[in-house]
Image 1 (cartoon, helix red, strand yellow):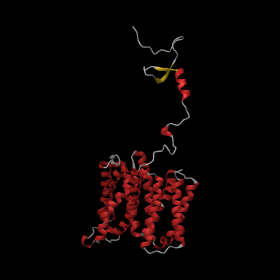
Image 2 (cartoon, helix red, strand yellow; image 1 turned 30 degrees about the vertical axis):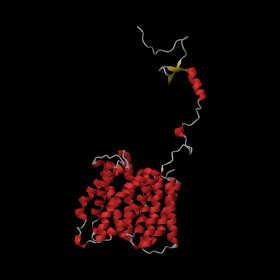
Image 3 (cartoon, rainbow, N blue to C red; image 1 turned 135 degrees about the vertical axis):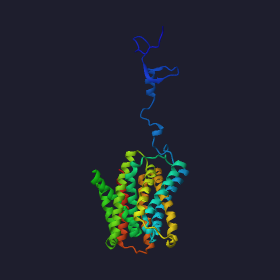
Image 4 (cartoon, helix red, strand yellow; image 1 turned 60 degrees about the vertical axis):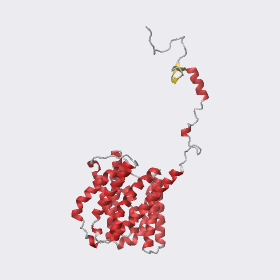
Length: 353
């Protein structure tokens, strides 16, 4: 009874076969033939798909470039717009005392827009997480938005925006205190220059508006804590930023709705400034577009590109604010702006190395 044997080749039989190479007969190539093939091949030659020369790198199509620039434009426009729109909303005396409700409204609209973007437009996979997994980050989320609105209420747009830049050094400091993480000397130098630059521009406001300064400090501190915690949650839960935001937005909205009855004052509708009401309606959708667009920019470009764009947005917001206030720039302001934006760009560059 014959059977197929897989035993080793005996002396005097056909040459040993090289495993892993099949011929047309489903047999194996002899070692001699395999060696001849290897000699013909240039083992040092890079495969075409690994060749990084200019001729082989796929160039983005005109459509891709157009979409990338559109995402950047949407992000820049929505970032600038939301600051000034929120300033109009909070200029109304009654709406100023409804900031919890306004924040809850923003969270609700953000959830709706993100759900549509994920479920209908297929921009990212929609996942739903247990509430207990996102409760803590949702609490930080609510806190940083409330304090941010308060900072915008008690400070000028320029001071509010410049104070937000200090979130970066605060993150570095808290990472060192809480997690023991250290940074390189170039990063420390860029952070120190950033703090000096912001100090040069805002020194007058710091001492003339103590309440606004305290609120601004609390705002960028809680924002730094939120950024640290959200980074941990993204790693622990293995989700993307839009997926986490989709889950934390409704939880944060629910938390704020529980506080509304104890903190907010019900406005008298007849006495509301309609300009502020219209701005409030628009602000929810602009905030949602801002959240979606920043994910698009990071996803389609890079985090470094997003940081560079952020500095340009800061410059635009501060410049428009000073123009609106008819503020005459001093030499100290110019030096401060150059130091702030330059050091922020330097930090974004050296921190990626």
